[in-house]
Image (cartoon, rainbow, N blue to C red; front, side):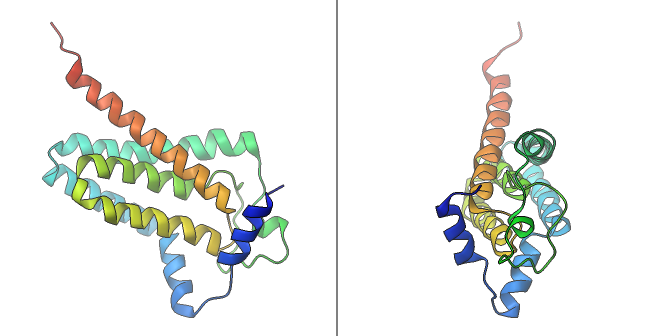
Length: 177
């Protein structure tokens, strides 16, 4: 059962908005759009980051690993029902989805990506973090996640991104003799 704070925040964010806001939130949750942004960012990092193509590979690896861990490991273990399935008052303008709620894979994927982008191209950090926030809010606005699902996804994704960066940096620390 969600906490009272979760329910209050859900009710605050999951309200009918102007059509333009509905379109923005739908776009922010669109997997195809987010993957296109990820691939474009990977190419940018490969060409412009001081870490070059290693940063591009880490970005895509972070997204894939965050998605895999959240969808295949954590969601089945927790089995939290989406708010649009469990609460009659929740509006879900794009439908509810078939999967479980905790954690938000969208939030995990974008947080993992933002962690890598912040490391590889610090000037892009504000844009990456703004996208993370927008995607997270969109998941609650669209009624498919509780706020705590999003926060858990952010923590999971940031941890995965940081772990991959740490592993990549270890290659510089360990010299083969």
